[in-house]
Amino acid sequence: MNDSARRHMLSAACILGFFVAWEIICVVFDISDIVLPKPSQILVTMWTRFPAIWPHAVQTLYTTMVGFAFGILFGVALGVLIGSSRLAYDAVYPLLVGFSSIPKVAVVPIFVLWFGAGTVPAVLTAMITCIFPIVVNVATGLAATEPELQDVMRTLRATKWEILWNIGLPRTMPYFFASLKVAASLAFVGAVISETVASNRGIGNLMMIASSSFDVPLVFAGLFILAALGVALYAGFSLIEGRVTGWAIRSENFAGGG
Amino acid sequence: MDESALLPAGNVIDLEKVRVTFGSARNKSQVTALAETSLRITHGEFVALVGPSGCGKSTILKLVAGTLTATEGNVFVAGREVDAETARIGMAFQNPTLLPWLNVRDNIMMPLKIVQPFKQEFARKRRTEYRDRVEESLARVGLAGFGDKFPWQLSGGMQQRASLCRALIHDPTLLLLDEPFGALDQFTREELWEIMQQLWIDKRPTVLLVTHDLKEATYLATRICVMQARPGRIVADSVVPFARPRTIDISFQPEFVSLTQRLRERIVAARVAQEAVS
Image (cartoon, rainbow over all chains, first blue to last red; front, side, top):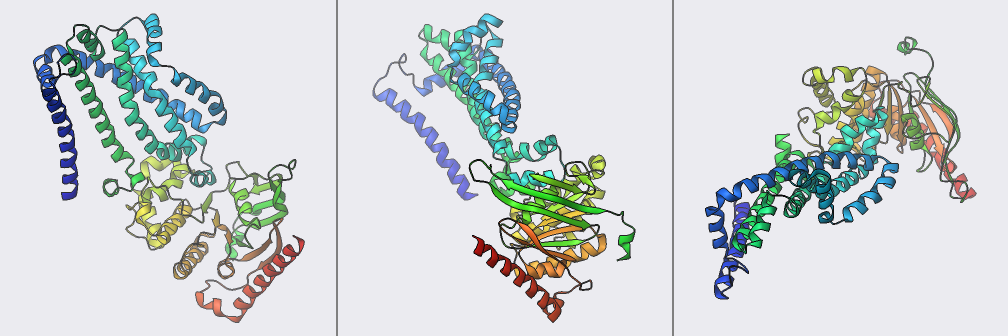
């Protein structure tokens, strides 16, 4: 316990140190607000302009979460398909790699053309940005399932669905959660890109407007909020991951709770 | 053995001129794992397959388990072609193969979740009747109170005991054992032999045991098939006459020793003949 407390202290000190160094560099070199605002100033901006920032933050969180939810839904479905069928692997995988190589910024105008500017393109962009790691990890997890474990079920004459449900999916959970932590931050990237290009709401839009009026502290305030949301989401999934896949790291907590 | 009269007639396992090859004939990489083999096992028999590595012992087991299909010939289990839902099969492997994300109790319960008729009532009975059933089987193999543990918290021997419980929990009519005692120490092994024999006497499943250990085969089996490698085939089939329940002590009796000695000579002769060929 003492050891882990020390680790937390050290980690907090490093984070704090980063911002302190930033502040000091800005003061020492007398850097202009327009180039790089001081962290203290960004915090003040966040505080004073909170009523203006708040609705944008909520909008971005909303589009990201909806896009992320769809990403998980379709990502898992596609991953299961690719991971359990040779044919699907051969047919869909190259398509998927090609698709994920396309810069998502280039896709936003198409979505806008189809659905108009606003929430829908942001949700869709968030979804397609975060889906790739989910698909790949779920497919890998399924493909890596030990044949001996499947044999246990096959001798019991289990159906394909029963094998998938009782062996494949639980075995894939550690891979799945690893991908979620990456995908969550990617979903934010997708949503913000879309808001920057075509929306009148959201953190992306806020930063766009702020930078065009040289309100650089507000731009940075937007970045800080995005980072905070991303960290919160990551932490949330880490917590769930620990509960669900503790067996993979042989955690004693998991054994006690399970 | 008058109970056997009550059981339905016919063979539990019937291999008819089965052949198994791996690889393709075209690029000469074809390996014959099992040459034309026929094997009949009737209800309540305890048959041991012994022989050197690569003689096709496990191949036969996989054919019966349905995880491998024969290249030629027919495999019947309980009078039907393998694949159809027929005999209730329990299987224990050389490795415990417990699922790491489930505790011991849920691991052992798995067959009850999959196999009829237990499956239908699984949701209702999993916390009552089935739970008691698991506890009972754990106690039987000396693992009472370990149901809440996870596999990695158990020693290798304990995991193997749990794996035996899983193989037996759904009262299988056909039990397939793929060297399940192979990786254990001498004393644990002998203890599990006794447990296994008692189970067989109580419930009389048909058992097919693959093993390297001639003492194990002679102690447990009613019938021993000796196999030879390259190509894999059955070269001898003998009945073990000793009365039940057998004890570890009888393994030091002259008749017991001479039987294992004969089996040993049979396998050694087969190996020599095989080396002369290759």
